[in-house]
Length: 92
Image (cartoon, rainbow, N blue to C red; front, top):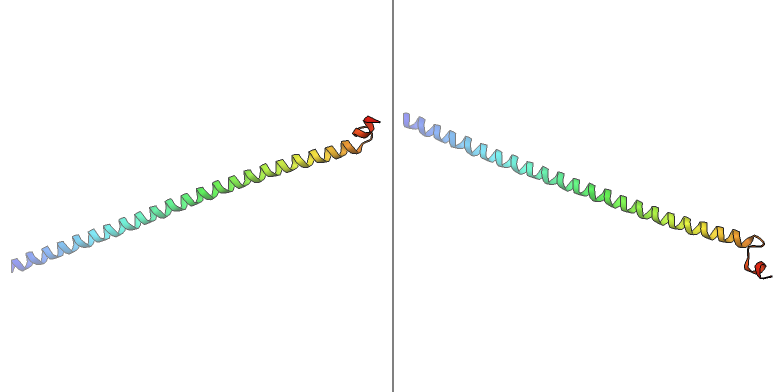
């Protein structure tokens, strides 16, 4: 009778240990997946922020160049349209 009790106790202990190990493995897999997802999300956010900053800087540089060119063209037109400032008037 005692041998049946010992065997059944051993079976219960083995089943409990196996279940605990399986649960620990599942929790570890879930934690690893969550960490991987968080790392991927952080990397994607960083890449998106860097791309947005680069695009904004490029747009600002292009706008600045366009504004400088437009101002130079407009000021050149204004200078050339005033009498006394054109080359023809200076030669005459």
